[in-house]
Length: 239
Image (cartoon, rainbow, N blue to C red):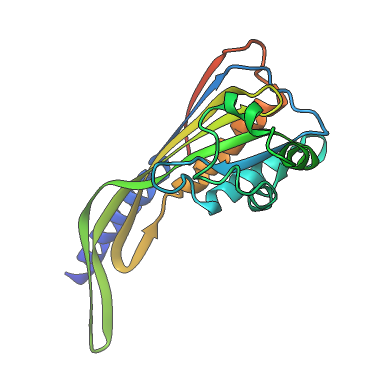
């Protein structure tokens, strides 16, 4: 009886193992308003987009996108540390005082010493990042127990998460919006109770970071910059 039960559990586990790798999807959207082929002497800074309550995008995700955007070799893009930029330009790009529109940057740079500080940083583009991760669905249950000489878990639990981020790009030199890049990733994670709990985690935020930094790199290197006001959409299944 126990052998038959364990065999049944093994079949379930193998079925889940086969199904889970395909349970993550990603979408990338890009909207371009200006030509944005960045020069070697220019830099980018990634900042949390100001919100009515606090700021959008957590620091860890901003750092992840920044590291992915920098890259190495001939295709590297200079990315300034966001906290250093905020400190050097304090308080003008803080959530409570940052301009609401790119057209207001021209007037903002007339503040005493601010234009010189921005010029010293070589920042040409500000990337305002907004978004986060939320649980959208879930179900099942798993129970674990222990007895003299034996312990184990049985059951199946799953949950779905969605990570959604949008980057709005401002060109400080022209005081205009250059465009936007958005990414949306959904993934299903699960824990299978087959004597020992076996977790299968969909790393939706990591995939979103890869997609966002990759598309921003394309945006700033001008790889898809044939025409202004272009709209690019890509949908992919992430393994």
